[in-house]
Length: 156
Image (cartoon, rainbow, N blue to C red; front, side, top):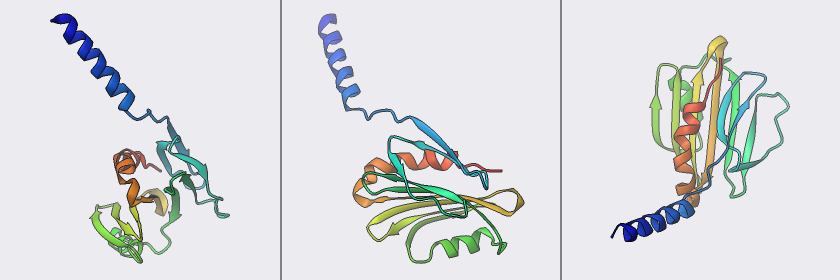
């Protein structure tokens, strides 16, 4: 009986290990201009888009069409979280919106893509942000990454 249990347990353990996704190695990107940083799995976002000339951030690309833009910006218009949410919602279908004293979260659809956009107000009038977009067909792959990426957003 004990042998049969151990054999069944070992087979189940092996099956779970083989079925589990590969552990993604975390990578921290920090923008030199604004100090905005985000941690994300480098195995998923395997290449970079051409960086903007103003040095405000970087967009990382996945093979399946997903993108992760990490950036900072000056709050030159001195926008409130509500104003920033309204401006950031233009042209997309927002299905989830949450505002805090110094942050904004928007999520929804942009055409055939799902997006998650988080913006945080930092010191000296800087806004730290990331925008994750991914094909709706890849929802099961990216939804589990959203909270870890969101929690890692940081900046002075």
